[in-house]
Length: 195
Image (cartoon, rainbow, N blue to C red; front, side, top):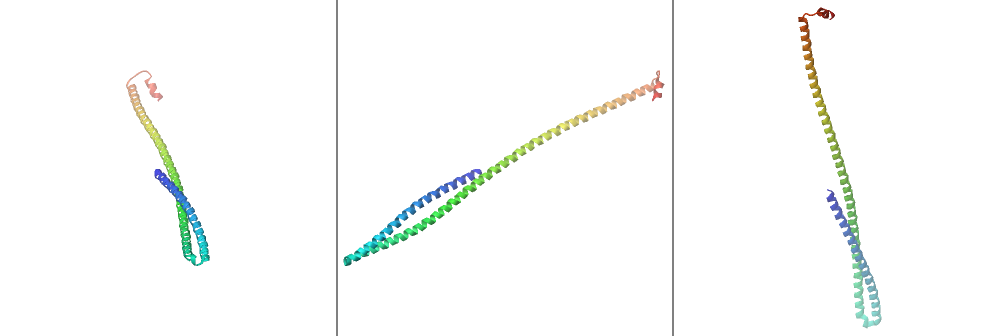
């Protein structure tokens, strides 16, 4: 995902550079149109001067007057065409700037996306680290429970052994008492009266 965001950012950067290049070309066209407009203006003035000269020449200047009128019409049409082209160039400049602004916003969006991706990856790594710590804790608890179980079994074993010893001791004591009762010896009756 991060690679796709970087690819998108690079594409937006290329688009921005293309828009800058278009703006540079549009500026050059605009300058050329200004020159054409100035030439059309000067041609129009020259045609007016030529028409005045043709009028002062009388009958001999009539043909020249027609040519001067056509030159004036041509200059006027050139000025009008230059004006229309200039308007188109200005619109193209506005659109190129809008495209550049969109590209800049895309770059900002991709930067935010990369930041969000990095934050998400950081969170995932944090969760992974916490999971590992929990796993270690669970393993330690399991070890403690196993140790407690072993200790409990050892205690149960020791209790069983103690019980067996107590039972054996009881048997021996009972047998001794039984043997004592059956046998006759000095002081036997003194023992039974003390009890």
